[in-house]
Length: 274
Image 1 (cartoon, rainbow, N blue to C red):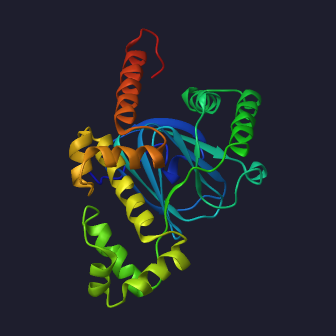
Image 2 (image 1 turned 60 degrees about the vertical axis):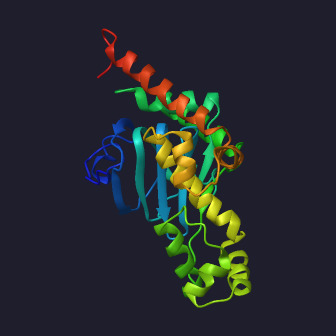
């Protein structure tokens, strides 16, 4: 898995000259922790994007967009060959959106506005500002759909989550994990709810979905992904994936293939923008 950093649309070095831009990013590309004085939207038109802050990790598959307010230190990682779109939000517009990192659903109008902003090599300030206003209006009316995986501070809870990060498909019960962490099942269950705001089962399921998105984005089969990520059969994986992501894993992969094919055809047309 490549971890080579390269200057691209998300690079801090490029922001001053390309506030709204897009590029294909290779699988496994990571951008080290950094922050911005303005807000930032990152949309994976194809592929998947993970954004990590001190509050945990958010994953945005191809029909969601990541929002990071000004001043939040964050890192990015990409899964699959990702069509990444960056939109910088001026400080005076950031107050229209939530004050914490999040992920939002991308409907047809929002998608077209994001693509229009990032497809144009040159654009006059007036039309850009109006398109940006459409984006902000759409996001302000869209409920958060965060695939958020919070991370604990309690040492006992962190010992458990570290074990699961190392092997998301691990089938151990909370009691089994508690023995390794030196805490009772009851204590750990209480800590999951009190510190992370969710049950152990929900946290592990979300972790597995994060890994499943990465696997599916690289072209792995639905069945292979289900087994790798800890589900006993594809049907239960499909149900969990659909509940959390909002579409079946097969539909998710089909959308990725269709988008890549469409972009390749557009790039091959005579006179297409380079």
